[in-house]
Amino acid sequence: MQVTITINGQPVTRDVEPRKLLVHFIRETPGLTGTHWGCDTSNCGACIVHLDGRAVKSCTVLAAMADGHEVRTVEGLETDGRLDPIQEGFHENHALHCGFCTPGMMMAGRALLDEMAQEGRVPTDHEIRTAISGGICRCTGYQNIVAAVRWAAEREAQTTPQEV
Ligand code: FES
Ligand code: FES
Image 1 (cartoon, rainbow, N blue to C red):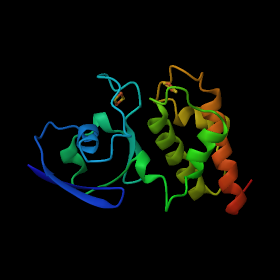
Image 2: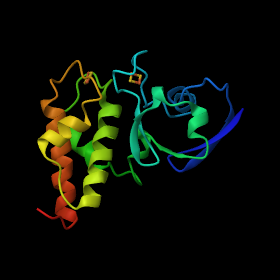
Image 3: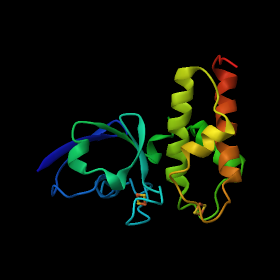
């Protein structure tokens, strides 16, 4: 069957088997291997992307289900050569070691910040931990990932009026 999925603003059309997972559709698109495939059990979270603005594990979505929808991957965070605050936050807070979980953690964090922006506030540490709880990191102990998301939230709050 033919599906068209808009990935980071670019429509990608391909004939796929109905069983094709979104994570594989994305990774088979040239230049988009930042979305990782880390398990067969929907547990690791390395495959998290945004589907119509919501964080989803792309190994739990069929490509056919995403036909006609918008996907954002970790490669879509950067804008005109500028890192997204969530990317800066990971850099500034040493929030990665091997980096395998990092794309999924960033996309989970970005989705939380987008949701918080609509509410006009920054997330609590508990909300950050809940948002990234669908991902597993074998390296960092999570503390610096939480710090990175908090750093990005505070950075964005400096440039956008927020309610306290
Ligand atoms: S690849 Fe592990 S949760 Fe999707
Ligand atoms: S940085 Fe290695 S798994 Fe998270």
